[in-house]
Length: 456
Image (cartoon, rainbow, N blue to C red; front, side, top):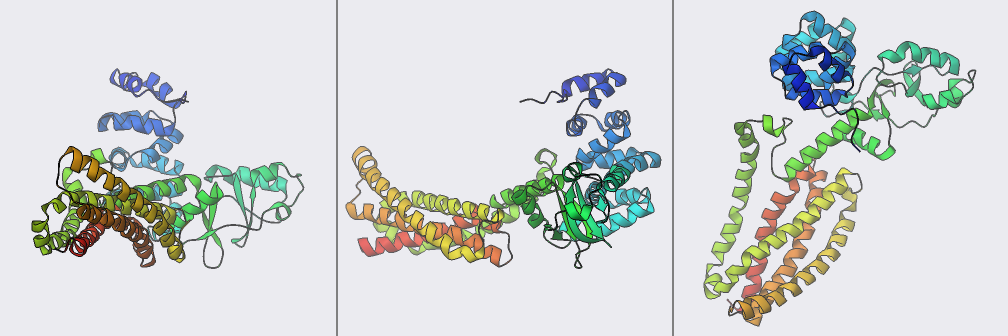
């Protein structure tokens, strides 16, 4: 169902062009920040700066977070120091850190110069964590309660500090910063005013360490449906929280990264239409060169069996079908296993189980394809097209196809797990690499079967 508050980009652009800024401001106040950010992509930089200034500072900060880095950098350059300070004051700390990581050094210097000393210290602490760690995506703006507080005192504290916290629904119970438990606002609301927080809190708290991988932290959100996740240090002291919106961003980024690697492209965080042809060339050419070199082995195998091909020229016609079928079968297995790894369903300890399952699947697929190919050879190639194909040649093709499917699925399911075990990204072992390896394997099987059954 369409959102009733969805911003009409055409209407907004029309009002901006006619300089009806009061009407434009009224229109924008009824829209979501993410939708307003889309409008800025259609504005010229000069007009974007003007439209941005008509927004209330709270809305402006929310919209600013949703913009792409190019627009953010331009607006920061157009802001006065006072304007920049107002925006930074309204932004949550983790959003400020995310923006800083995308900005040029000169812009970062200006942001830090216009931040308060306390904020500057917090920003530098978050920037010190490794880029892919849980600490790098957390915020230090959360609600912390003392276990001795009553429910009434807890609500009074939430009202006092909640305005500067990214979420108030989940509150963390600490003593000397040590994480003791968690309590939700729902639990507080349903408890008597004089109830003590330590009596109603949950002590079995799921948390992550500051140095844990951020993808592992995001998987916890996916598994438990959390709204927030506490981040602790080595001494189990609460240092920050990760909220669900940041976890969703990580899941999306990791999925996009896996997708690009599976397509043999170097990941990029810039939108396609805003990426220059030269940058796209840089991302693609290394993989293409690598795959081209690896495909040289296929050429060597074909050259080694020139005499066999010369004796049975019809064998050449089936090479593309065998290579494509093997590559597709290997890709099916690898993509399935990579998805299982990313969801935490499959680990290296499951290697034997996975190989055994894919072996049984490959036997069924191989026999089915071999039978279909045998029928196709005689009904299409021999009877309709009139090719002089003998039963031994048909057997060579069908047996090769069945064996290729078996080998391809075993290779496709095992390589991502081996890559994960060795510390590589399993997505790298997807379609391109699997296909290249299976191509070579299928040709070896093909020519060995031809030599054995045809005596060439």
